[in-house]
Image 1 (tube, rainbow, N blue to C red):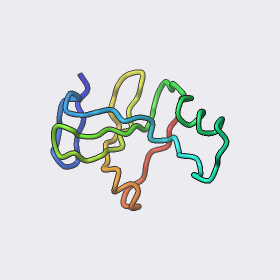
Image 2 (image 1 turned 45 degrees about the vertical axis):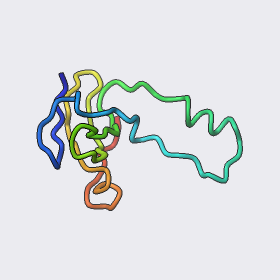
Image 3 (image 1 turned 90 degrees about the vertical axis):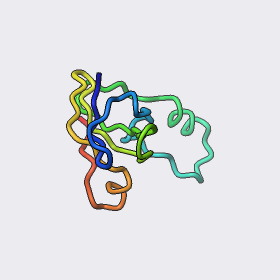
Length: 97
């Protein structure tokens, strides 16, 4: 079982969290009307092996959105940060390999 270190609640089992997707994917400009661009954004995802940044939400706890840097091969958690801190510039999101 994966254990995440929530910055608010401390160490918790993964069953308290919901995986929300790839934190490295950026939404296209809303003014782009090309269906192919939006189809790629919605449906095409990489399946990386190794270090990867992901969104998780602590749904059974503080409800915070987190950015988790996790190794997809070993499930080792390298970091777990509040998403709002990353986007406010208080922390940095680790680069995905």
